Length: 394
Image 1 (cartoon, helix red, strand yellow):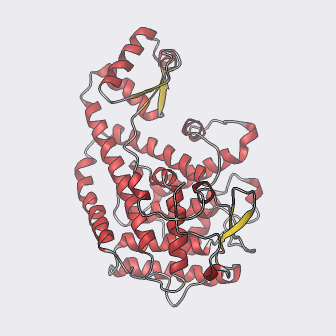
Image 2 (cartoon, one colour):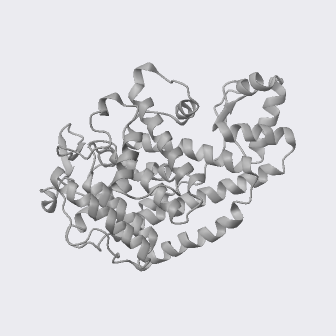
Image 3 (cartoon, one colour):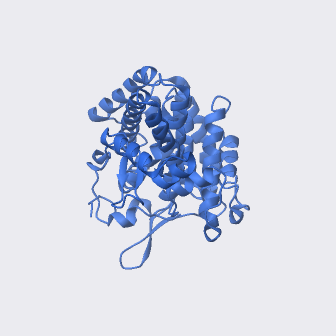
């Protein structure tokens, strides 16, 4: 159990969330967060050199990151779907007729990310574009047809199930009536802050996400849409590396702290709009974890570039598909089991692949992941179980 300072519903949050005179504000920032923001800014300069890879290698990195992002963002909301299944869905296949909602959510998020990556310069942070993006996100879920692209008409409290089986409200978002008033304010204040340049753009984006999720403007899909909007805004503010590493995967790996810091800061900004440093600190540390993962994978790709052709081709296949087995490569290339296993062994010995499974025949090979960002949890304190916090429902 991780201990966090978080009650099911504090006294301040008995009523639906409301904002004061400002939604977007300059943060009351700690010296630690200043250092984190400086590290994030520094990586943008490093990326100019890091991205000097062959186009096909950059494309492979982006495809793997996209699959991870789609899988993680969908799982954060409670769906049970693997990276392998997401890869099949993104490729146009159907995974399981009994899990049509999971598949539909995957397709929607994948299509939304593709839209952002391919049209980021023409997209704008407007209510109209946010609603259109929500429609794309839920396009393949029939039960959501009546409310996709429309703000909520009924309250959507965030609840969690406790170990004793009881369900309790852990956060009351803005009311439907306040949502109609707050969303134009949020969009206008975010646009103005980004254009003015007086507040770090990373802080503005973090504040936007914090307030967006406090408002919870749609009946469903708010978490996934907030992460897609994060990607869009970061790209528009010059963070060109974003498509090549999954921020969603970092959040999934640290989702207890993600929800705890959101909850703590959402409560704090009811009284003081500048009091969101705990959330900003988490947001920065997540971005840095994403950046380090990208740097690790770029280094991996550069090492692969000087391999013998046969090994490079095999590694490229695994990188593009996320994983592979000996039988799969034999079926694809027509080479012998022995030859394929030997090449896999060379790549494992060089640290370029990881082997999973004891049996040689069933062994699965994947690219190594960067070290987990365990430091994202170092400031977390709460008094409910991690399982409860990690699976809220709205």
